[in-house]
Image (cartoon, rainbow, N blue to C red; front, side, top):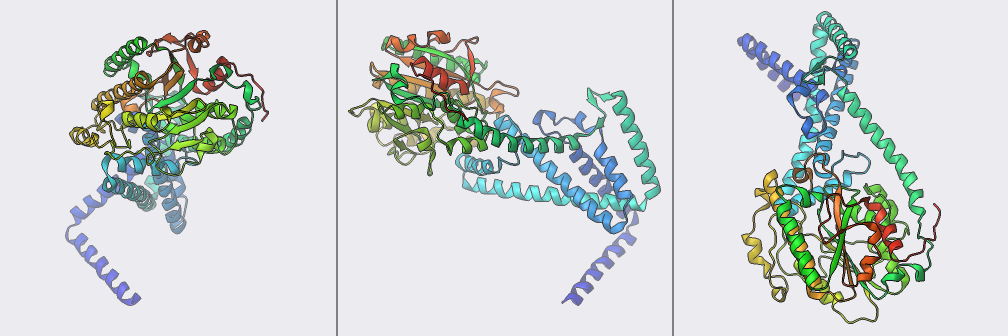
Length: 567
């Protein structure tokens, strides 16, 4: 068998040589074109930024120090070591390019770069999101395409550097002279600060990217140990049950999170008119029903996604901005705001989680006696992209299953509303509360709605539909309160994070609105010192707190006595 293989390879080489001899000009032109392409790929990868706004032509008119150093190294090596080093060098450039692409994607969606220690698990979530938004076939194709692209990048870069290494070796004298000249020009430009269009000509972009990734890994490993100790310290960790939230005894308290409800919804010129109109209209409607509200701003620990980081930050009083911190804190016994109610023994506690579709052991950490996930709410209607059911149905099911039941103790609830989750198409519409049934009524609405593929890639349409989804969620929640609330209902609702950069814009804040609504004037009097805005719409200059400060401020406002535990 090896003999036949050898003969076949020899015949192929012979044919290629004959073709090259028959068409020397074409062969020479093709060979030079491949050399130029290989050089362009390597240099382009070494200069590639890791943010979408940085992908501009002027970023590729620079001299990469890594290319000069690589050329010098390859020129100094004999043939076999040169091939091995060139292949490894090229593969490394390919891996760095993949990391740069991941940085771009994560920055666009989550407002931060990719963390090689923590973020691999989020790629599964990304595939699930694509499946929910575009279908399982598209998700599978995207996943396979991403893997193939990554492998192709690494392979092509390795082949390109090997080819360039051979070219340098064949023209060693001229290549050595060229490397010396390029090095001199780089040092001169660096020393003089020479720039083109405001961008330095001398570049060490690849080395900087590698240094940044390394620093991110080191910081992550250090943070894990430091945060574990921080999570063990708790201002209210040893507070006796009778000294927790005594000023809310007898109240039905609801903590509701609205997906992607951020400052952008209230201030963006395209989005805000509709959202603020809803906020003002619903403030008036609630006031007519006897409810009043105060509103401010919280700075979320997350951006664009990973909603559970926002939920856990607001309720734990800890800054939980990555998955490792989330795993650390949820595996411990740090007191959450929701668990504080359960610890008193004076409340039943329940969670309504229509976005949860698998086992959720965190319920114990949150202190929830009962959790209703996507399969427990009795919904038989269609899904709306990622959202398993419309918010109106989830709230009506909450009323039917828990809030509207007669009970011996008041109820503390955590409710997660998901209709404003990206890609914001199709969006549910309000129906009569008495017409909800099992949710089948939403079938026609789902069919008449826009397709996610028509919205997801268009920034203007995404912004417009995002605004509509927030209007829907706000209306559902406040109508539920108006319809089913009592004199003892206290509603606290907030956003979990800002929407993705395609909607909120590059450099947007991480602020989200937060409101406290109640009929009993004493509930709002307790937070007068917060100086929040009256109504559901926070003023632009209303106080802004880190989301991690909310738990302690809330517990303190309603009479809780600090009894710290040490880390």
